[in-house]
Length: 195
Image 1 (tube, rainbow, N blue to C red):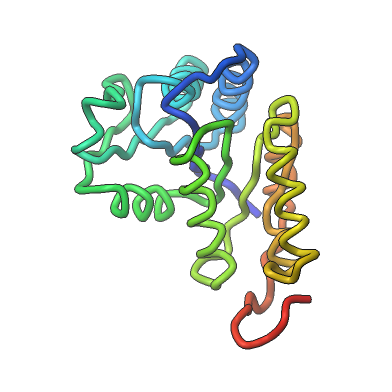
Image 2: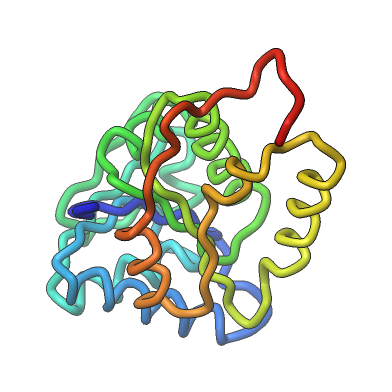
């Protein structure tokens, strides 16, 4: 799968551990070095600003999508290749998805998780066939992974839908997983028990 553009979901906070910022820098640099355009939430603060600045400093293309209502709170980044201001969160997520070939979540909070789970649900329902991944910085997402496995065990999520979400501790390995990912032939879930 050819990845020309990747959407990165991440926090408007930098988190408690500097290692999260280091991971955001590495991801931004790696995307630029691979000539992959970064699409993200358009903010200049937190991990959003870090990943964007790193990609830009490495010569990458960065497109930010930010709602008018959050432009001040998230401090809309003024140094991007392009900053698009949209009407609201739904428009933001739709536009980021439209511009991207894949999705990666760095550490983040409720907004990061909400964005990830929405695009994952879209994939489950067959609205898109784009790969998704978690950059699991020092086990940040390990408890979430265990909970997702429990959802499979309890038959609320199919194993093949769980497998849609790739996970790695390093940007280069995660990008390789996303590039080699094969979409489901028939992503169905309604009316039958999970596998």
